[in-house]
Image (cartoon, rainbow, N blue to C red; front, side):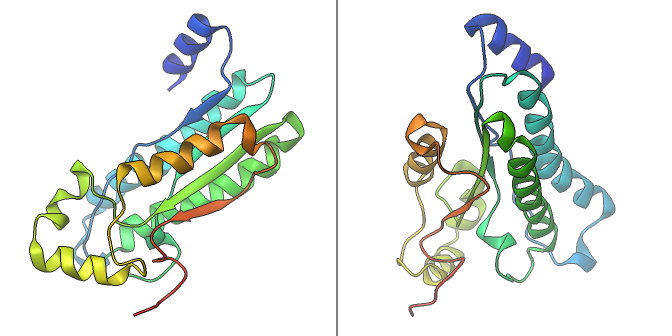
Length: 182
């Protein structure tokens, strides 16, 4: 990550905004998850987020915005989500602590917690009709998210129009993380 941040600051003169979209989905109960799988989930989700914060805050001398990704699964109990929920809950903790640490430097740190979103990564779930139907039924708005749903929230958090927002975990999840309407 240090190299990417250095390239950006060399090319553009400074770094104002950064988002970490790295992640994975592992749906297994803890007793069937190998230590290697768990380490991989932590690396892909929490360690990448930590490295983005570490690298970006070294060069964000004029303030800025950092957006990380958690998951609705970190905010509610979902069966077979132990590894991903643990990693994404770590991202929430990282978001809150980093927001407190870097607020004095006018660096805002926020987190998006999406529900199941129609992406390439989620195809293993969305291409199975029964799994897709069950997932849709878990979301109060009665549909899965789209990349555009999530991107609009990220863009707003990275934009200067959200300069009064830091330390927030924003559920872009069709209500999954907070309400039940069905």
